[in-house]
Amino acid sequence: MSVAFESQPIKVIDPSELLRPEPSFAKKPVAQFRDYTIDENDPIKERVRRTYKEMHTHQTVQFVQDKIKTWTKFNHFKSTIKDALIRLNDLVDESDPDVDLPNIVHAFQTAERIRVDYPDLDWFHLTGLIHDVGKVMAFYGEPQWAVVGDTFVVGCDWGEDVVYRDTSFVDNVDGKNPKYNTKFGMYKPNCGLENLTLSWGHDEYLYRFLVHNKTTLPKQALWMIRFHSFYPWHSGNNYSHLTTKNDEEEIRKWVLKFNGYDLYTKSTDIPDIEALWPYYEKLIEKYIPGVLEW
Image 1 (tube, one colour):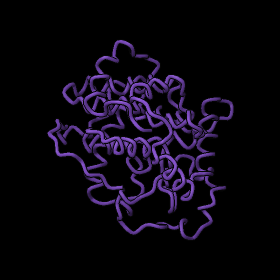
Image 2 (cartoon, one colour):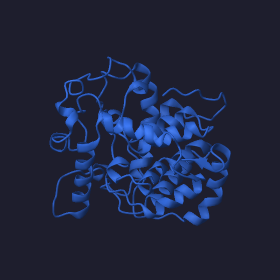
Image 3 (cartoon, one colour):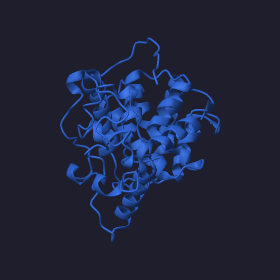
Image 4 (cartoon, one colour):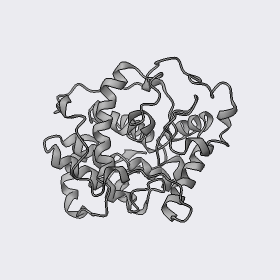
């Protein structure tokens, strides 16, 4: 899905800052984030494992194609960005081993830490706030395994660093299909991120939603949103046989920069959301205003 971006001046980050050391703001050792060890006696770990098992069983090429067709009609509901975000008060991400709080808390944690480090990049602040709002699909009939969690490429062999890769794909029918179960599967070498079909979730939906509703957020923001859950690629270095030089050297840097805030800001510290709304309402009005088609 190609996008024509409006030509507009935006403040960007110095490339030398894009890959900084592990963040000092993390509330626990960074090695303790994203702990996917299996422990049937730990209810959160078991919830996470079950969510990924369902995801890896049902996320096939056909499933993703069907969801793209269904959700890109943008006829499910109409709402402002703020009202959609407020819905996340009622959603706890079943795939997340690091936090058990409503998703709106995570949205403000991410946005506010970006705001501290990059006070002049208002588009970056808003990206942090809205990056998970595509999870509203969970209120319109989608199970969480079709909404949350890490994404991966469908239509070819699953990346080596996909969570629970060795145990959770055994019932996925694409694994038995010779069109899809090889290294390249249905793709050409180095065809690029733009031409890959990822498992369906809030990332791809929000990206397409923003394009459909003609956001003026810059392309860097849309890269962050579209690929922030694509951990096997941006953090695991999988799929390099399918990506391009620009994917690896340009897009990936921006996604990794965002990822540091998305992941390491997770904690039990709850921002004063009501006090923060006026600032973010102005950003919503600037970049993605009005009642929108979802």
